[in-house]
Amino acid sequence: MQKTQFFSWLVSGRPSFHLPALKLLLESMFLSVDPYMRPYSQRIMKEGDIMIGTQVARIVESKNPAFTVGAFVVADRGWRTHFISDGKGLQLLLSSWPESLPKSLALGTVGMPGLTAYFGLLEVCKMKPGETVLVNAAAGTVGSVVGQLAKIGGCKVVGCAGSDDKVAYLKKIGFDEVFNYKTVKSLDEVLHKASPDGYDCFFDNVGGEFASVAINQMKKYGRIAVCGAISQYNDSVPQKGPYMQMPMIYKELQMEGFLVTRWNSRREEGLQALLKWVVEGKVKCHEQVTEGFENMPMAFIGMLKGETLGKAVVKV
Ligand code: NDP
Image (cartoon, rainbow, N blue to C red; front, side, top):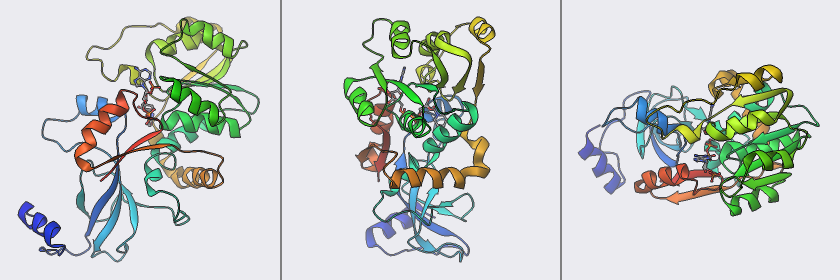
């Protein structure tokens, strides 16, 4: 579509082009800003590429009988207000999605980050009732779901976050022990005090120094899910060390990195479970919504700097 045609349609409200057969025209309602965009854009994208990302979009015109106008989908089409699709790769919002529930949650708790928490905790940490779970970046999207699912699963949960407001929020949603990692004198001491017997599961969103300290506090046969390394996403030179072999050996730990896409075939199962817990009020969600497509960069940078509580989304 020509740019001028597109703008004339936006102004007039009438399409001035012909949508080809089997194609859809969609408008983004909400766009997600996520940590993975930082290392991805640094390492893989070239100047001039459209920034990668996910949106909740509404179908505004359809020449594809499989998709009806007005339906909402989750798409992976980057930072765009509108796009044309042949329908491939679009995920319709769950049919059981309640009208009263914000559709933006499909980018957070009931979307990819929620699934990351769900599969990381169940399949990588192999959490069991009665165990103690440690999670960092706990007031973020993945971390807050990890903590709440661990509570549903009958575990004790220790979390950390980067501000006192975030600490207060985590206590409110049921975390057992929470601390502000930016103000503690000794991370080692605070982790020990929060769980003197150590940790069975460590869900690591941060990596770097936090992970090096936490690994020494694991119980024997503990499991570590290496989900993210946000403390390193800005590094132009890879950090050296720490060298974790000794605690890995003498505590017989399991440490496993994962990508949520490993469980794509079980996506529906995970989303249904998360949606049910959200609707029942067992999993609480907090969103920080920035208004306006032009504010995408500001929302993205703010999320990386820790200015966001819960999921950062942009309302287009
Ligand atoms: P969040 O909503 O948690 O946002 C990022 C948070 O990370 C910030 O709010 C900030 O909180 C914290 N943070 C930023 N810099 C640092 C730092 N240097 N040290 C410690 N904390 C920091 O993001 P998500 O929940 O979307 O993602 C969490 C992690 O999970 C990320 O590492 C991400 O890359 C990873 N991830 C991995 C997936 C996978 O398939 N493996 C899929 C999805 C996400 P604070 O104020 O507490 O510092």
